[in-house]
Amino acid sequence: MFGDLGLKLVQEARAAEINQTLPPYNDELVRLVMLETRQLQTHISGLLQEAGGVQAAETEESLAGQLITHHAAAQRNKRCLLAYHNVRLQYLQSILWSKGGSLELTLNHSIESPARLMAHEADKTTLKSRCSMAELAFVRQYADLNRAYKSEFLDVVDVSASLGRSTKTDDIGPIKELMVSIVSHVDAKDVQTERGSISLRRGERMRILRSEVDALIMRGWVSVLDE
Image 1 (cartoon, rainbow, N blue to C red):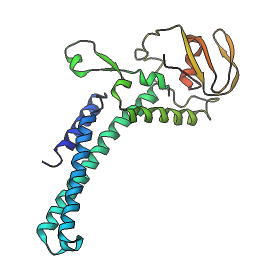
Image 2 (tube, rainbow, N blue to C red; image 1 turned 120 degrees about the horizontal axis):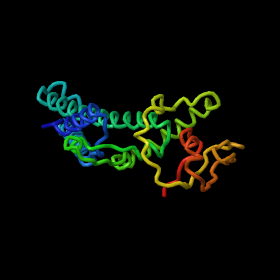
Image 3 (cartoon, rainbow, N blue to C red; image 1 turned 45 degrees about the vertical axis):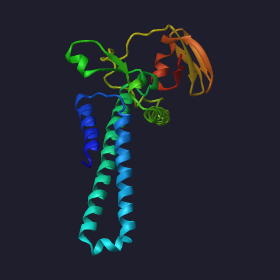
Image 4 (spheres, rainbow, N blue to C red; image 1 turned 135 degrees about the vertical axis):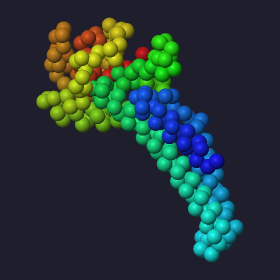
């Protein structure tokens, strides 16, 4: 029946919202809903072509009923797609803010499988593995906007830092490498670290101790390069 596939997307999004998690992107179901929507539009165009135009619907009640039914089904599919993606993007935004605007920490955020939780088994995957390519592009662009927004206020306060971060450290996870490769997003001289001061130039890459730049990563001044 029309709309059943779209309803499944909405139910999946609602379950994710209640459980505060992000299931893997359902690419197959999204494609099926889009295909159904295109088929509905094609059928509407065919009906109008056979009837000789929209004016025929004003006199033929059966034609008007078909057009309204198919159009409403297509519009409902579109709303279901928008709702599904909106829930996922809101979750990504909330995680980014909870990580102080750090793109790296956001993409590496651990997500536990509800099924495994019920069985008391550990099955954690990263947020990055649950996203589509378009969602990953959105997160990166949103992180850039976040960094640009807060850069005007960093001399006063880090407006994107998580208020609960000082008491919630279990979401960070252990540091795997002492030395990391970073790239700078700002120009700054004499930035104080635990081992002294360093100077940053936009676009410059360097190898440095992770502990020296943790604060800079949180502020968005630098980011860790993918290994």
